[in-house]
Amino acid sequence: MAPVIHLENLSKSFGPLKAVQDLSLTIEEGEIFGLLGPNGAGKTTTILMILGLVEPTSGKAWVAGFDATREAQKVKEVVGYLPDQVGFYSDMTGLENLKLTGRLNGLTEGEAEKEALLLLQRVGLQEAALKPAGTYSRGMRQRLGLADTLIKRPKIIILDEPTLGIDPEGVREFLALIRELSREEKLTVLLSSHHLHQVQAICDRVGIFVKGRLVAQGTVAELSREILGEDAYSLTIAGEPLSEAILQAIAQIPGVTGLRREDGTLTVTAREDVAPALARTLIEKGFRLERLEPQHYGLDEIYHRYFEGGV
Amino acid sequence: MRRSLAVLFQKEVADYLHSWRFPILMGLIALTAIASMYTASQAIQEAVNRADQPLGAGYLFLYLFTTSDGRLPSFLAFVGFLAPLLGIGMTFDAISSEENRNTLIRLLSQPIYRDDIILSKWLAALAVVTVSFLALGFFVIGGGILAFGILPSLEEVARMLTFLLLTAVYVAVWQSLALLFSLRFKSGATSLLAGLAAWLFFMLFYPMIVNVVAPITGQGSVAKVLGEISRHLWLSRLSPVFLYQEATETLLSPDVRSLMPITLEQAYGALPTPISFGQSLLLVWPQVVTLLAMSAVLFALSFVLFMRQDIQSR
Image 1 (cartoon, each protein chain N blue to C red):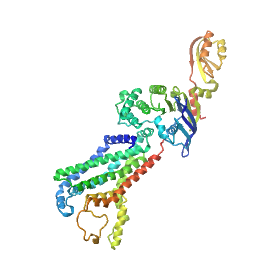
Image 2: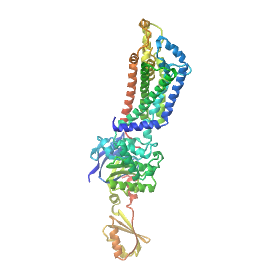
Image 3: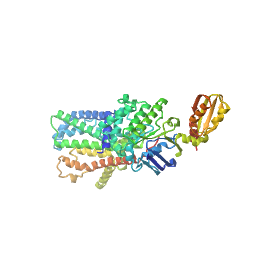
Image 4: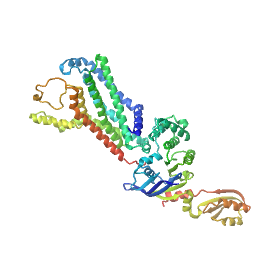
């Protein structure tokens, strides 16, 4: 695995406003990286610097071995970009829009047509291929946008707020599609979002971005451990009997940090995933297990601590 | 032509031909052409009489462009008046519409040079306008052949072609100005208004201002009057409208021998014959070059502005 995107102390100021400060980040090949942060945190500016569309005030951005500022042309050949407000020529059909992008990337008319039809099928728009793009719904536009980033056969795709304004079912499908494509085509994906819940499912790693600074990065599990410390994991158990002996046995499982009884259920907190050990112990002790439910990694906590409470 | 430029050029031309604005603008000009041509042919008797005289012999076709019966302006005057409108109408939202439709950022993230985007828009508008004006000109010539039953001379065809190409250059000046506005103003309406303001300024107010600043009193010594006239002309020639008028009137009227005042001494002994096409062209060459330069400078300004424009995240 080689670093595909490598940012070194990247900074950008617009006058007195420091949009991005001292950003260093490495993204490996084939990884899905989520850039998370509230609106106005500098995510889009960072993306535009990676694409070479905005010149950094200081620092360097290397993309697929190219300097994004000096060799922007080369970078744009290997990076597909889906902007947060993606627009298409509304009087041209979806197919024509895709063909135009294909031809701008050096495909011939015939190649572009073939490729565009394949991609339209891939993103589930084959029915709408010959309709004007102006009639597309937001979700369809996003999918057409995804096809648009793929027609150049990129190594990397960058998606800026790809889930914004799509209904929950659409979000799930869209993210599943991204994950599938990334696995099949060995694509590196960088996506930005202010919605941790939505993207955590598909991101291998996330970076949290607040007021122009990257305040944390790692897997969601790592982040939650970092923030919530000992109580990173929690599991709820329901069953019979909740005797002292059982509680003692649970407390002795390595990694368990706390127990809390609440009418008929037991909440176990741990610093790592103890579910298998817990289940084994419970069965051994003759506990009649009705329910063993891992709780969320405390995503809301992460969200609050970083996004709203500041750092 | 670079490949990406060719692809974009193709798209822009298709865009113009499919849009509503082009048929509207061109329809307007074609209608005025037909109307003024009709009145010109009504007044053709007078034209023929004039053509009989030695001064304008054999230039019947050119009269179609320049003659009016007093009710409607001549074709030449109409084109001079409406061509800026065509130029402004073509490009006033060239860049801002891409921005508003959010398609600019998608274009910019493709591996193409940024100049291709602006160049393709400018070239496409120019190509569409040039082809349309040539078509209109040939239509007029064809109509003339039908009406008169005679063929235009080679010299007339050369003059008419040059006139049409010069009109395209004139449109290009306004097109470049509107392109500049489309970069400067994010809203298409503001940009259009700015373009119309510039058009009205040069059409109506600039000649008035020149008259106030450099009046021709016609009194005093010959040297003084000549000085006044020359000052007046130099100021007037800062306006593309005036340059275009001077150049086209000279090209379409072979009896125009000079653009500066001629004293009686200079005219003494000159033969009252029309001058050749080459001589007419030579006479207006500075005007032609200035119009080309104006359009190039305005385009270069837009170009620089566009290259420097930072991509703003919304």
